[in-house]
Length: 353
Image (tube, rainbow, N blue to C red; front, side, top):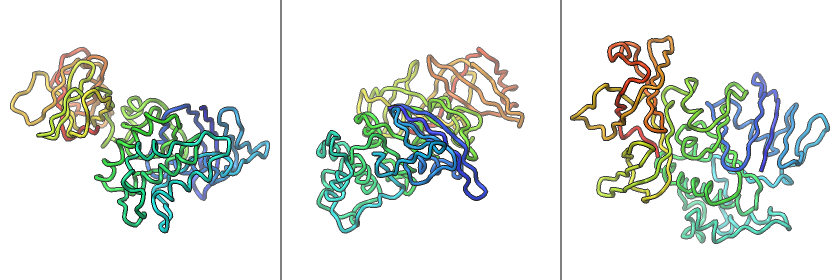
């Protein structure tokens, strides 16, 4: 699947003027609230008309304002998952799910009901009504309903924004399975670094109605322009060992192992780990007597002062790069320079799987 969209739209004092292209996998529209992410996804869905623009999927033109082409939303075959599940309260979960099949085209390959139900872990919910479901369960049902409409593209607009942290942790593994086990491409709208780090294959970073930059999660989340509270490194690894007694898992990286605070993983599972730069300290000798479980040895690959008395330190360990934000005074006191051996001290609680 190849999706190309260009759109310009005036909304009061706000102007959307953006475009991007994406292929299979998960493309995240990422940025702060008010950056234009939802406006863009509504145009893709056909819920809004751009003042000027063009939308093409797999060579089929769905929108071209110059040629006055606008394919209505019900003919685009896009699934849409909103912030709230928007389930029919008078129908059971099974009936809500099968409702999606009415929107599947007659010549489309029928989605496998049992497979989707099993993938989303909603087998035990089929005869219940939405009023008796948690927020995370409602969202899983809403995703299932969208998939059963046999969409060629799935649009997800902040699907976890209305959930508390416990419900987000519950549903994220199912979104990973959705990404890994279906061939349906996804455009995922979010301002959450943790969600983007875990789910996205490609990130489109938006700001003030425009596309600021695009790239992999690791590239985008390590940019200085990312929110400093959440900017950091995204590392890929494999679960080496799970310790249920202490609620921990050991993840093997390219040249080191780290411990993350969860036992809901299995050995051999591929995971991504987000390490915020603000939660990484730098030492020139291996520290001892610390509560921190993770100390990664590496070499300083770059020092990037920001002109405000702070600097970003890039520490390379094997094929991985860990980021740390320290004062320029610390840079001077530790005599940090490119190529210097150092130790990145990471607080375990700072790691998001």
